[in-house]
Image 1 (tube, helix red, strand yellow):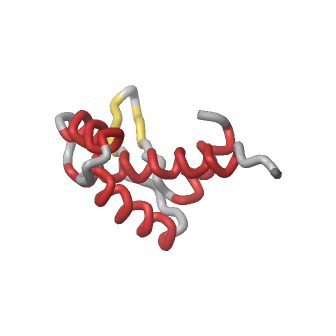
Image 2: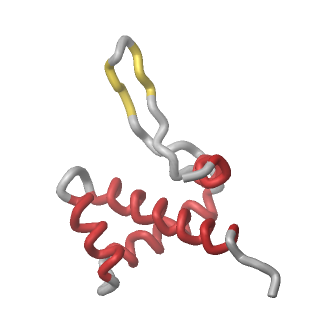
Length: 94
């Protein structure tokens, strides 16, 4: 990921925040951000994870073994955001 996609994810609020003290990780809640865009991406992530598209369904299944359903949906939403950013950033004038 490049510098701008990370900042886009922070602006939307799909980056996990962290509170670490003495080497112990206390929290990993998502950050506050643009509530409208975050809501749309959350709903898209939920739908994409349960779809027949192998890219997202395999990702959903792989990540769901590690954590809760909400964390998996946020991960799918973050992946959708990265895909959209990559498409828009590589768009050329034709």
